[in-house]
Image (cartoon, rainbow, N blue to C red):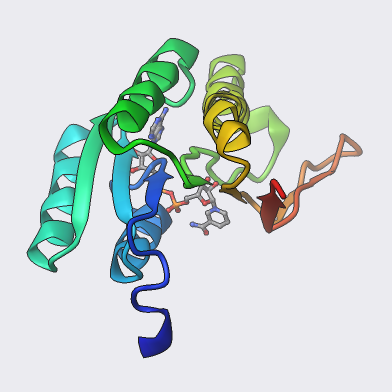
Amino acid sequence: MEYYKSSLKGKIAIVTGAGRGMGEAIAKKLSIFGAIVIVNDLDESMMNKVVKEIKISNGDALGYRTDVGDYLQVERMVDEVVSKYGSIDILVNNAGILRRRESIEEIDDKEWDLVMKINVKGVFNCSKVVLKYMKKKKSGKIVNVSLRLVEVQANLVALIIPHLKRQYLD
Ligand SMILES: NC(=O)c1ccc[n+]([C@@H]2O[C@H](COP(=O)([O-])OP(=O)(O)OC[C@H]3O[C@@H](n4cnc5c(N)ncnc54)[C@H](O)[C@@H]3O)[C@@H](O)[C@H]2O)c1
């Protein structure tokens, strides 16, 4: 563990949905490893709390209240991060809202659309915008956090997503 402590020194990392839960834990761990962490969340107070806690632990962090489902907001966040820090090295697509349901009948169409907007389009938006910079730099890492298995009952589609998929650019 000690060995890794400065392995991400100076790297710029965006973690989406980092105001709590797994995103918060990932953001804090990246900070321990030396990364400058962009803490993204929709909930400003949770986001600010995580930024504050990282700074108290001598880390470097910046909060961005951005809806990952909104392409223009994502683009603004990433562009501002790059103009402030010069690059973007790591993206962790963590924001997601899928709640456990026993049956598809319990999900209404509004909830379905929202899940698609955040869990699917959010990953597309963030990845598309950071790729522009990572490709130019010829380096970068994108980590997608997802459900290992989404089970949909009653002979509907079973969608299997890799638990943790790493996409290396080079
Ligand atoms: N908790 C689990 O058991 C579990 C298991 C497998 C996968 N996952 C996946 O891991 C990820 C994190 O799970 P968690 O349990 O920590 O979730 P969580 O609900 O505790 O945290 C998700 C965070 O994302 C934020 N968020 C929601 N919509 C957003 C948006 N549009 N833009 C930016 N931020 C937004 C929320 O405010 C919240 O802080 C999710 O994608 C989830 O699907 C969770």
